[in-house]
Image (cartoon, rainbow, N blue to C red; front, side, top):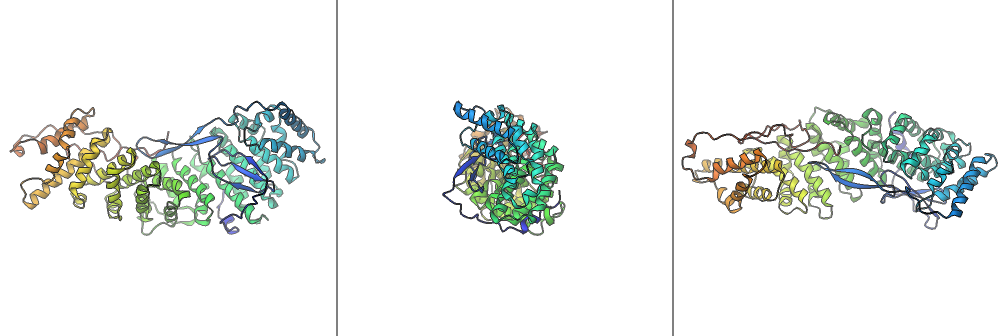
Length: 601
């Protein structure tokens, strides 16, 4: 598919005109991320986001990382209520009329309009009745009618039929609806009928948004991207009004996002051209609906990577799209314009969730300069704002903390930028102490340990006593053995730095030992000597014997047995080869952070 630039040269995207509040409303269910369409009698449509009738979007935690956006099927049209026998008989009569109608008599249009009204009811439309009556094939056949009005009514009825169960949608696919819709989109009737184009995209959107990803793959098998690319190239020549253009572009954005979703994710070569379209939306429109859909679509594209290497390839593809300059091995000399826009969208309530998710995904990439460009765009301040925002959900605040801990596990320069960002370190410390939920505290604890374990150059910038008390406090409430080990390493690094300071200043005693004992560090160390993980046990023993046992000539004792290292544990970020920090030189060492790059299986 060629570049997706052209369509944005002919429509100024902004607030849609006020709808006629007195117009009759009918419901048309769209699958995907739950976007029902209410269609007015004049054929225009207004799109609104609400809870799905066919699917429910929930948040599912992934091990050690952000939550995964998972689609859980719910009952939708699977069990139709006991229908009025008279209405069922009427539906059967209408279906029979469509089958036998002469295309020149006007009967198809009347029958189609009546059937469409039956299928447009909000509660349990009689999709299965139409399927059982053999009405799907005649509806698909009507898409080949020369009349644009007949095609529109047929596409409308098929959209509602495709909003049902996967089994019902399969009947449409077997009847050839995909090929027939592509035929309509390529026909001359589209040129002056935005409503017909819009309706055809809705049919494809319901197929792509089904929980059965084989339907999405069936669209790819029929070369859906090439067909949509040709349609996109035609848009500047279409004689549509402003509202019609906006509706088509909105549904096109929604459809392309649905094509990027699902597990297993589509292969990169199938969705590569969609990067250009989403980037054009993000830089070329101010329509909130399109922007939100493009942000979600970009999340799906990045999260669809099969491994870390492909994740970097996809991130570079995104940042290089549509003429943007991005060299994978070049540092960030200036903020990337696309990333600057995405960071700005975090400040908007209607786009906070997808923009936050997209930026969190980017900073988890095992590529140094991707994270550097995101930081250069101002993301540290944005993450801090979300972390401290009491109006944000605990999930959002946890994701922001997770992203900051990823950055803290990056290069020394990235960790220093986090420290230098106005108020960011203070926010992390505050949330470790008073975070709203366990996950926020958990991720802030990781961020602090990642900073402290870098040693004296970083520790010398901190309030050592306060940080040590935070580490001890976090240690009391954590059961994750990997985080326990990291917190012990951080405590050791602080005590070791305290020894160095005492020696430098000629003091007789490490000034951190007394507050550590008062805060209950010894009790925690004794307790962790019973830990299941040997690495935690040995580290607790080592700290006790080094700083808290009475041994006047401790430096003359023979070397103690060294604790085993925790080999095989991944780094802080998902296989983060970008992290240039070596394992801690402190006795035993420890991983920076175990985490998962992929947001789901």
